[in-house]
Image (cartoon, rainbow, N blue to C red):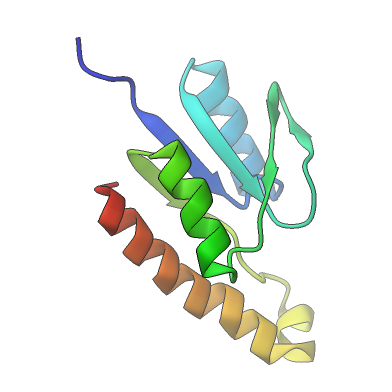
Length: 109
C-alpha cells in the first residue's frame, strides 16, 4: 500500500492557511501546520511556530516531517506592514519563499 501523503501548510494561522489546514486535517490528511509567532490551535491541529526566514530551522522541520506537498501561504500581506518594514517583507515574501522552494525540491515535494 502506498505511503499516505504528508502535507505542509505555511501560514496556517492566517485566513487561507487556517481554512486549508483544518479541511485537510478533517479529511484525514497528515498535516504539518506552520505559523510564525507561536503555536495556536487550528481546528484539531496545533501549529508549529517557525520563522521561515531562518533557513536552517525551516530545513530541520521539513526534513523531519518529509512532506510530499508544501502549500506556501505565509507572507507579509498587509501593505502597511510591507511599507513600514520593506526589508522584512522582502525577507519573508521573496527570500524565504525561494528557500522554501529549494528545500521542497530537495525533499522531492
